[in-house]
Length: 206
Image 1 (cartoon, one colour):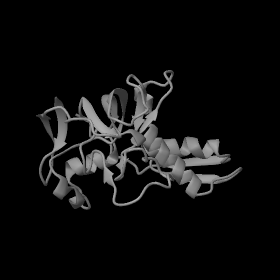
Image 2: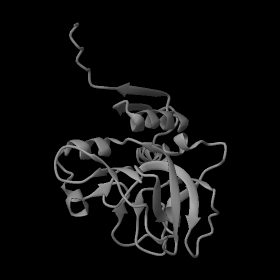
Image 3: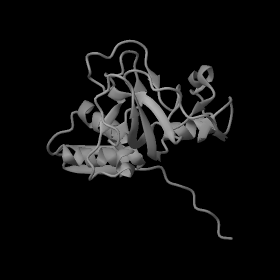
Image 4: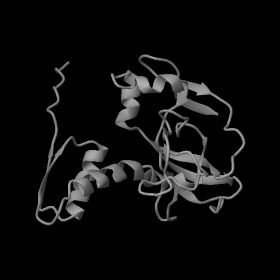
């Protein structure tokens, strides 16, 4: 299957044909990916920005951690049915595959990150712990499902910031998370939301 991978230290990514994932372990599901977002982290890894040396021991790795698709197969001990539309939470914890979401008291030990330290969603198929697969309503398409992770980041920022009724909120940066943060701040009751971006240089006329 065709994948988009970080294969070596330095600038760039590679499109590579690799085998489909191996056998599905107990507590895992196989997701057929239908939509993937491009995060700022993906861009930083592509450009090899300072701070991404943590990836070195894990290369080569298939990128992509904002993705959604459908469950096409399940391992033993999994209640999810094949055909279920899911968004995938990218933080993977050791265990039986049932705990995958922040706040779950079963989360213990070192974590891995789909698309950064283990193979992620820029592929046709990915095996993930069942606890990392969030069922989506059939009325929510997978392109919106791929936004669950960045919107969750935006929501957490609003919760941590304790945004409340009538507050004024300044959002620095109008990227996907910034726009999501603005929406979530308004939903939390903010009276005024200001979005600021650094000015961009204008191209000279040809």
